Image (spheres, rainbow, N blue to C red):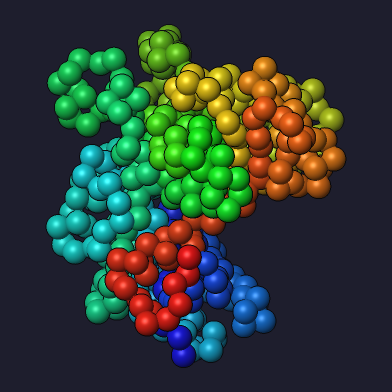
Length: 400
Ligand code: ADP
């Protein structure tokens, strides 16, 4: 049996997981998730390599927490998937703060630092900590690696990372960090094969999923990004508003009687595409809807991307390429057409037929700036880091 790497992405009530071939991490052996932890737990997994798919439901008392969920995943892998026993695990961790500029092996000190960052990502970080602890208890000898969504942006200069707030607050860590870094790093690693001019030039990547952001890259490194200290800033998202005049928050507190908890709910769960449309946070449903408010939500989504692409181009001093990725970026030609249409002044000439086909190249021959669709794969990026850090399968052929 080949050495395998387990990748975990733990959320509040679900843990997504995948298993990768240790010598070729881009070869995903299996994808799955356990959802409804503590409520209606259900494990689903599919594997093209093993030609199998599975669904198991559990009583809520059987999987009350992350400990139990991780135990179920490990037992299920061992019993149902050709005896997969990972030799290492990689975790997606949303916030790496000032300290982590790349992946690290987790020990007690690293875990304490990840936990110290909980206030900067209260909706995500506690669940990563819970998953890391659970795995350490269940499989104490399994090496664990943390990969951070913020690390990729550590190359940004001080201006790109600062708010214009009193210095004492900046020194306490209140600054821009940026997110979706694992996805951006994966896309950056693909640029050479796609178009060397983009790998060496000025490229904006649009990660458009439920969460959405842009990253301006020069020679594949991050120069600016639309998300700030938290994942609320920047573009319109499924349920988050993106850029918001901070005076709105004061108004909500002082005139509408909302407290911090109510505002957190509003900003993370009730705004964005859902809030504007009143129909759904899901782009597929909005595109299929005849409600005028659904159209308005889509138009606002596109309008804000176009404005932010302009801002990213300014940070780069021009633009050579725009890459679309994630659920909406990879699958919604109408959104890509809207964005490229709005960015025509930057030199993009869309090839309508190629866009409808899903690319990969979306611009016409001769277009001054190029555009592509690239499917992101955060988990295989994490598996690549685990392999490199632990030198797994170092006797076999390198992955890339
Ligand atoms: P997450 O941020 O949760 O990982 P995804 O990257 O999976 O999100 O993106 C989810 C979004 O992608 C949803 O708004 C969904 O409607 C949208 N999406 C997925 N497939 C399509 C499609 N064929 N057309 C339009 N939107 C799509």
